[in-house]
Length: 178
Image 1 (cartoon, rainbow, N blue to C red):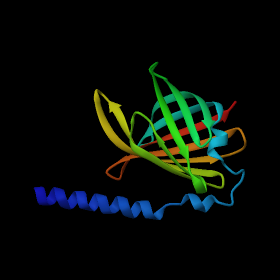
Image 2 (tube, helix red, strand yellow; image 1 turned 90 degrees about the horizontal axis):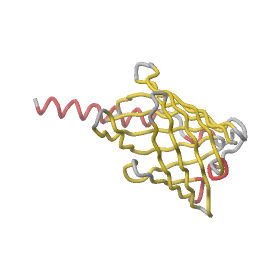
Image 3 (cartoon, rainbow, N blue to C red; image 1 turned 180 degrees about the vertical axis):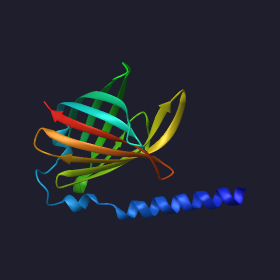
């Protein structure tokens, strides 16, 4: 049984690595406009509307986010307040650092370790592990988060949530800068 379980886990891990190598790269969007500068877009008040879809495509959660964002030099704070359709609320405060070459790192209380991101053209790709509470338990899930600037006010975001390389669902968001 242990040999079978080990073989299955190895197969899943190899599949996840191979799947990660085949998708688009943020550099593929280098020539796209308008050019996204994350520290400029996430400066001020942002309103977002979103949904979470499970891996079968069913919308299982709707929400809005009000973000108050500010930067001082290369350090930014994104204070997010989530309001869910079931009446619950939550808050996440990101502390971001802008690095040379369009790279960003970030931390938040429910993020395991450090988030790492890269902007290029009109796109930003952000990867991190989130501690997600579900029915009184916490699970560590990985997010592959893509943002695309549509115009100076609107940005679209698609994030894939996975565990052990298996997709659990997707978050779709529309940001509007006030």
